[in-house]
Length: 158
Image 1 (tube, helix red, strand yellow):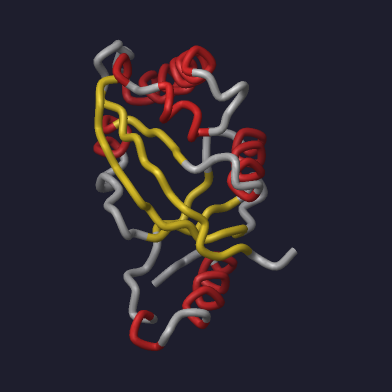
Image 2 (spheres, helix red, strand yellow; image 1 turned 180 degrees about the horizontal axis):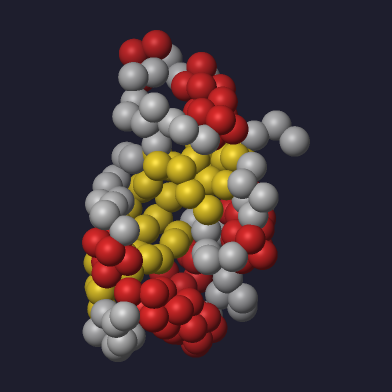
């Protein structure tokens, strides 16, 4: 059962758009991008504009938080910085690679900054360093990064 009321409502709206045979989809994860309300708002805006079609997380963070690595076909309800549910997205591809091996193509798909690999590395090193500090780990060039691609399948009415 989805505990977040807004996410539960948006999920039900989305399910109602599907053929009856597909309405038994597994419940989504509910989350916001980033580690601050400001970052969540920036990144969800890129998603809703169709610019951001990828996201990255550390395997270490997923393990630390007791989550599982995203799987192709899974759904997520994405929140903004105020905790409002704004869209449902579906995972379309997942790969795990060392930080130093994240590609320029993936950096572009993440849609952040100037979409370059250099920007991605700078911004994500900073973000991953904050996440590592929470786990009492040191970031490394070989830390395992989950590179997830997704598509927006439903947007909240605004």
